[in-house]
Image 1 (spheres, rainbow over the protein chains, first blue to last red):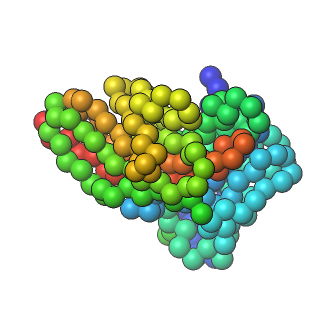
Image 2: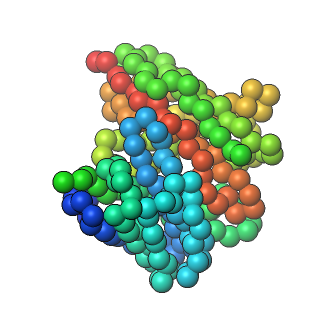
Length: 117
Length: 114
């Protein structure tokens, strides 16, 4: 089955610890995205990547880092600099081609819930 | 900058009643518009989308939405709500030659009374 897999489903972070959230897709999509969701805030973009070895900051990148070494994978690290990391994190992917834009729809994983111990 | 406003944080309807969720966007050119639905603890599922053409678009689960350029709106409707429709609904707008990143509204939580 094609799709986006996020792991783990639940994650706990201790004070001063870095944690990494995994996102893998087998849809052969070019672009991948990380969103943070807080109650009543909607989805806010953290980072996105349109091509391997390249990524751009979104609206709330401070305290987060990413890498895109493979087309299929876009891990997100929540660093100790992120003072309020408790949230639901969603990864998405999409085709990113000019022409037939209707095929560039974003598809989402099931999310990772991060809490602070 | 693009923005999306969903004025209703929480809506409660009775099962079988009609539903309309409001969405207003701010964008200079013709936007690409979406409605997504999220069940508790889950990811987002695409309900429907508008790119061009007919301003009334049909989606999954019996939902439809109407694009009104003059009002910068893209409201979601369903004639008869089912208890399984209880979820959070997000309106989003995209742009550009490849669609790219999406801008989301804050969401509307739908509660359905039996």
